[in-house]
Image (tube, rainbow, N blue to C red; front, side, top):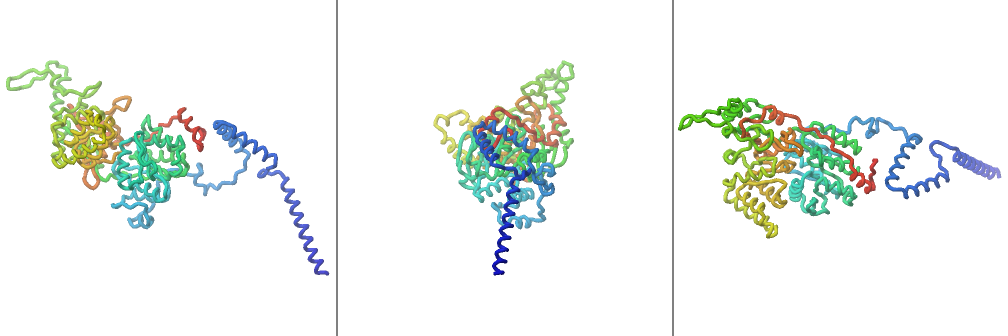
Amino acid sequence: SDSDRSEDGTGSDAMVQSDDRKQVAVAEDFIPTAIDSSSPTDDVDMLLSELNDTLQSPMDQAFHAKKATQSSSTTTIHPPVNPKTDDNHPKTRKSWAVTDCIPLTNSSDFHTLLPNPALTFPFELDDFQKQAILRLERSECVFLAAHTSAGKTVCAEYAIALAKKHCTRAIYTSPIKALSNQKYRDFRNKFGEDVGLITGDMQIGADGSCLIMTTEILRSMLYRGADLIRDIEWVIFDEVHYINDSERGVVWEEVIIMLPDYVNLIFLSATTPNTIEFSEWIGRTKRKPVHVIRTNYRPVPLSHHLWAGLKLHSIMEGKQGFKPSGYSEAAKALLPASARAAAENGGTGKGVKTCGKGGSTSVKPSSVAAKPASGSRLSSWQAQGSKQDWISLTRFLEREGLMPTVCFSFSKKKCEELANMLRSLDLNTAAERNLVTSFAIQTVNRLSPVDSKLPQVLTTVEMVKRGIGVHHGGLLPILKEMVEILFSRNLIKILFATETFAMGVNMPARCVVFNAIRKHDGTQFRELQPGEYTQMAGRAGRRGLDKVGTVIICCFGDQPPPQVVLKNMLTGSSTKLQSQFRLTYTMILNLLRVEDMSVEG
């Protein structure tokens, strides 16, 4: 019928059209284009190439991969990139270091933006702490630069709480073992049993969600490809300004470079002038923005003094400038000794006449001038104090209520000498002495009978009973831990320590005393840099307990330190962060063992 013919015609037309489409499609397959030029021969070549790659060494694979990318970059057609929407494009992005703040008009805004925090604190957070916590909630990298004792640890604690909430891991790295041990005790009290400690000496709770270790331990884990690296969400670098260390600074840079991209980084540092520059490098290396949060806020202001003539002479209060009048008063207090030194340097050679009960006598100048400290090319202002000088200073600190006190000395031997000068003093009450005695007995019982009778053990136990302690790298680890715990409980009234005690060990005191302002940096003797002085002086002042922290610089010589040196040390800018990176054969060989990294990359 007509209707059937029409239907058949329609069907035949449709079949013809479908055949035409197939022919066109087949024809298009044979048309060579710049986008798709695949063929069976190319597939075979690709399989042979992959087989050849598997037989090559890792170094050859890296070389050929780099050569292939360079040659293909000129022929491959890339899709157009919109520079307005590509934030990570190196040419379009203005800066990897972000200094923008999240707007917070009042405290309620913070709780509105963070209704269900991973960790709550029993005190009102400062603005910089709120900014850091909000950035952590967004899984963003943070560089927090603040003064000592300003509260940077809050940021680290919140990151650990986030890791526990997300069932991941947080790594807390520190430059020294003393800081690792202290943070282990603090975090264990706050987060419970789920905290581990890994150092070169011991390994406790390695399966915890929060692991505390030195930076060298983390680097070795990255080198050998440890399994726990896959579970890390946060890595916290405390005291990252230690990157300036000429010997160990390269460790921080290696770890930052080798960490996987999915790991979020937190950097805690003292105030440095080039924080933005350092954050830029981190952002370029990890291809992610770093939010810089800086503050000059100090919870407890500092008061700086010179100890001269058995009195304190103020040379700087808080953020006010250097006070030359206080320096002049300190110089006048030392004037008699300075006058005798001037007579000696006058070249008369006749000595100085002094009047006594027996009449005038001639005294040789060498016996009158104060004896300088041993060493070459030392001036009179670098003289060390005698036993009577230190007993007078300790009695003054006790009378003025300036204890507990940390006295910094840049020599292990000098720390022990100063502590032995105070053998006649007992700074603890009877009740405090009983507490210290019982704790010391418990500590010593953990040692073997032979070790418990070592001279260092007996001397340290006897000193801490009288409220006097020593802390330096030469102590046994168990004795060092005992001293730290007793000092944190206010059972040690004066502690003689080296510079390592100030490297992040969160044990503030009411007063800090500097025995000297010169140190040996491994190559030569030099004055303290402003950043080093700020780091140690920042231990003065306990938040919530002291209205002001007292810093005392001892002057036991004929004159105070030069005014230029003091002014630069108190008001100068901190040391810039400088790269200490160096490529070594050891690093190259270790990188060849890591599957996800190459030396060229």
